[in-house]
Length: 395
Image 1 (cartoon, helix red, strand yellow):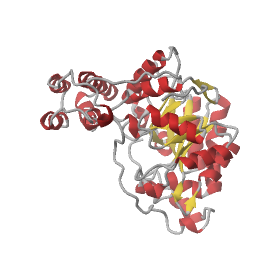
Image 2 (tube, rainbow, N blue to C red):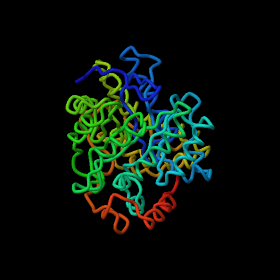
Image 3 (cartoon, rainbow, N blue to C red):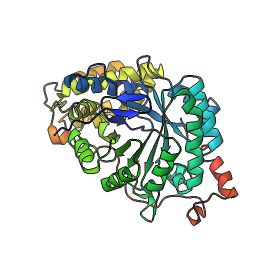
Image 4 (cartoon, helix red, strand yellow):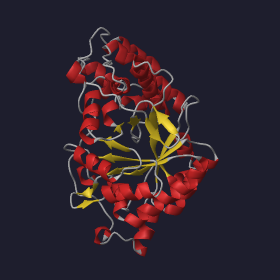
């Protein structure tokens, strides 16, 4: 299944393939983005679009850590020399701090695109009013988007907003948030068709993406949730009318999905079906990129361990080698173990496709006391939200 879509226009940037890599904590670092770009280029080439661009966004960066120039954060916003356009996702809860972070990115030429995270359902984020909880406070949400756009716009850097349907079925926020983002100058909005209390369980409700598209009419609307194949992506666009798709868990251990997606939206039937040997080579290249990123081989090997099960999904690789790969501590050992894989094993089709990553189960969203009493932010809640980034580690 394929469907020709026009290029995705986000601010001054034109993307031949209307596909975005979703920011994922601990996953979409510089090394993984590079790998996805390489595979996406294969799909674009198959469609005759060599030299075209796709959008690959960094993992989430907290605005406070960026303003304070925390060393790990400054490491996470590093880009490859050939990475263009450069996109950073910011998580912020205070308009002043968000504005300061956007100003740093803009004036120091650290990115060409800023994405704002209003979709994180993690309890340590929502219990202080951040992430998916924040759009409930509609005017506070407006102030944050406004601050980011105000600092980025003079430098021609588009700001986009990624969000969820709402906190739960009784407290949906996406239509109001989409309109506010549009009014405040956001260049696009992306919607994950789940509420925060769903986390990643159940099925994404694509009808919400269609409704948002009806309400937000002057900027692109992107759809997110349960895209495990190019066929899923094409079906989402046909069912919702969205202007592009955002892909997260579907590419875990499967960067070749970006080749499939690029080709499908160019009307080409190309699909990546790597053998086990080719998958092993990709995993090894991923580890090499991680070693370059960290400047530390052991850190790279610790990182690649979590990707092993995703890379080998559906292949008859054997329990022993899977177990040993999940404990790998050097690139030399990784080479030895990859060499033991049956390189001729063909792509297992459905066994290697479909859902991947943890789905979890629905759970009540952790929120500040009285958060749902009013969409207005009181002084106590403002003080609490000011502390919301303190418990978010890493970026």
